[in-house]
Image (cartoon, rainbow, N blue to C red; front, top):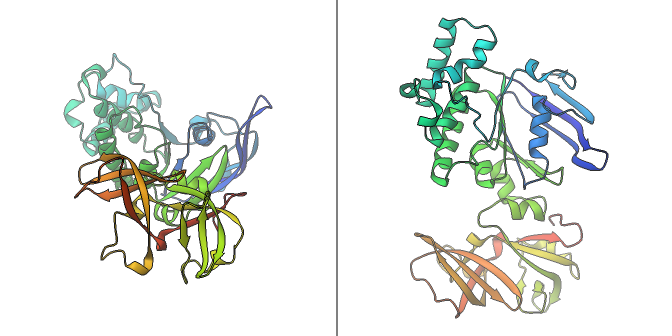
Length: 369
C-alpha cells in the first residue's frame, strides 16, 4: 500500500495550455479516492502524472514521503487500468494475466499461483483458456483487473475503466471494484466523469473543474454541503435546480424573490438566519429535485414547505418514480416524485418546496452562502 501526496502540482502544455493548476491533496494509505469532473477538467492528466506517464511542470509528488517527480513509471509500483482493455488477442486469458509477471522474471509456479488467485477473486477461473474475442465486455474488464492484481502493486490507478460498458454492467463492475478494494486494502485512485460512480465507490471525492480543485470531501458531505454552485450542480442525479434572484425584505421578514417576481419564497428562522442578513444581495437559489413534492404530506410539514403553482411541461415516468419538468414565469424546475398518480403535461401543478433543503450561492463568486 502507498500514501500519495501532491503539493502545488501544475501541468502546462506548450506554454499556452494549463491542464492542471496548483493541485494539493493527499491520498491515505489504503484509501479509495475518486477524481471526478467534466471532460477536460484535468483528472486523467493528474492520474498520469501520479503514474509517471506525464511529466510534472511544477510542484512535488510524494509517495510515502519520497519525492518521485523523476522516478520512472516502472519503478513506482503502480498498476494502471485504462478505459480500453488492451488485451493481446492471440493470447489466452491466463497468458494475458501472466504476461507482466513473465517480463519481470517470475517462475512458472509463482505465475500460476498468482494468476489463479486473482482469477478466483474475480470469478473468471473457468475462462482462463479462452481468447479475448470469446469474452464479453465485462469478462474482458475483469481480465484487465486481474492483470493488474497479479502484480500485487502498492496502488491501483483506474482511468475511466467502465465507460465502455453498458449501464447494467457498469453497476455490477462498480460493486466488483468496491469489493476488490475491501478485500485487498490497496490504495486506489479512480478517475471518472460519472458522478454516480464517484458517489457509490469513493471514500473521498476530489471534484475538479478547469484544472482546479473545487472541493474534497466524503460523498455524503459533497451532496449535503457543496462548497459552490459547480459542485452542487455536478453532484446529484438529476442535477440541482438553480433559480436566479435576490434576497428582499418583506412584511413577514426576509424572502427570496426570483427574477421577474414570479416566485417569492419566505426565509424562516432558524434555517435561514445567515441568509436573512443578505438583504439586497443577488443570489442563486438551489434545490434538489428530490426535495420538491407534489403537495404537503406527513413527511413535509406545512411550516417547512412553500407551495407554488407551476406549468407542467414534461412528465418522465421512470417506474417507481417520475421526473416533472415545470416552470413558473421564465424559471424552469425539475421535481422527482413518487409515480402514484401522475399529472398531465400542459396543466398547472402545485408543488411544495422543502424550505429545510434550500441552498444559496453568491451570484458573483458562486460560493455557497
